Image 1 (tube, helix red, strand yellow):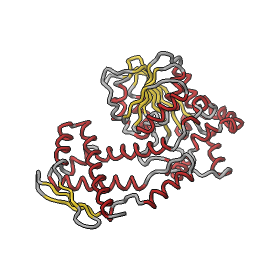
Image 2 (cartoon, rainbow, N blue to C red):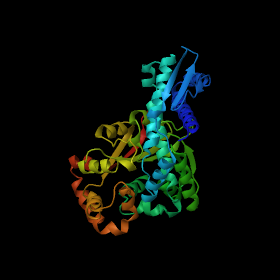
Image 3 (cartoon, one colour):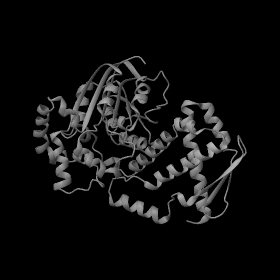
Image 4 (cartoon, helix red, strand yellow):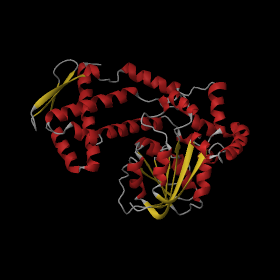
Length: 401
């Protein structure tokens, strides 16, 4: 990489680290966020020579800091080509961008060093103000933007994705919610929009949120392709950004809670649920050893912050409601995934099995249906339920905060 471009890339990445911290502070301390923004505008950034970035400041404690760029990672033409090739080889599968992750870690760390040396913050303040959380959210946004860009939404069969025999969670949720026509529904972490558009097809007035602008755009395009309308809103689930007066009949969140701090997130979501409203979520569970082996093998198609739910997490969600129920899915039916991996030798690093099994529902119906009936019997035994893949939680009557 030419020296000038390397220096300019370093400046860009350092300023982005400042922006991530500022956005994190703005949610809890707008005054501190404004102070940080003003201080960053006073910095002197210079190129001291090859492979470096010099940062100087005059207050609160004058000083300077040099970044050694040999410890950073940047895209080169070869890196970009190799990354694009990996995407092409993987079809519609997005692989986690290790260069972006290393950049975030490196420049966020250098920013913290500078802030402490300048006397603007202490180490303790930075440890508690969400800088790592801001980096996590940025990485999630990048990951899902890239995923959205890799998918042709016109090829998504919305009804298939929600009504197939191998989509038991959504079939159960649909029965549980009942008539949706005219009801307001919030889809938190909407992804490509398969569920949001499905609910809109059933007559709900849908608002779909996601941390990824790319995913929100994909959801809009999927809605247009299916002849329905929905509102989209770019936001993290921990900070929707709605006014307190905005409330919904239904809040749905699919495969989202295992990305967030549940204790912190649930009160923020439920302040937007009407008193008589329904909350419904579904997420993976943490206990099945076979599933955990799969997760390790398929790490490239997951984000690093994922934490499948434990029983304590389920209890924490249920404690937010006057009444709640749980339903568990995929126990003996997991045999299908074993066949996909062991017999058919599909590559878990290049294919999202949990989507493929729905897309190929007709081919698996002969095996899935009898195993689903077997699960109905096995899951009468409570101790087997945590070994399932997914759990659906339904809550009614949110408790006052």
